[in-house]
Length: 225
Image (tube, rainbow, N blue to C red):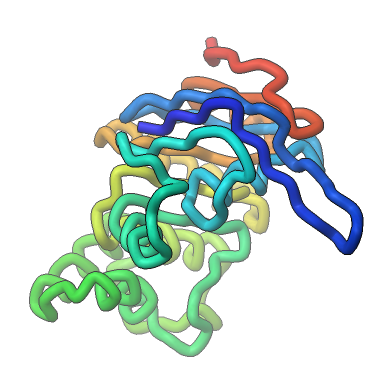
């Protein structure tokens, strides 16, 4: 599903160049549940942006589901982000004045999904994450855990093959975090490929494989016992 060979990413700041990734090789199979961990500045966010087709590597090869990402147009990349990847962020990134229904609807509008199908799918997803009774609530009327569940429902709107989660429990209390982790476990059991960026080793230990980054390089990858 995800194949990276000798991936490098360099950023220019004025006359200075900073290499965030330094020759990373990584394969993630379809249906895997993996975590990417590492200290601040290790390259986790850069890796997430490349996997999520939000950024393009400076050097190396990246294939997503058999497609060479660097050769695609901006419109093709947008389609991949909309159809193949569901994003879940630490800060939720919900529209503050839109209801739970409307927030989940956004990616389906971009996909031009039929209105009747949209409504059915949104209700189904909000019920799946335990928010059927909050369908008309706005983020300001929800707890952090509820907002993250709306974000997960939104990520699933177009039934993507990959769920890419960036510190999904970082802004949550332990009880809410455990509920979110349970949802990710269920998504993995459904056959989704789940890639989680985290600094929380207790969360990483719940995945099938831990990928460790340090100073922009792959330190090691290990299966979880």
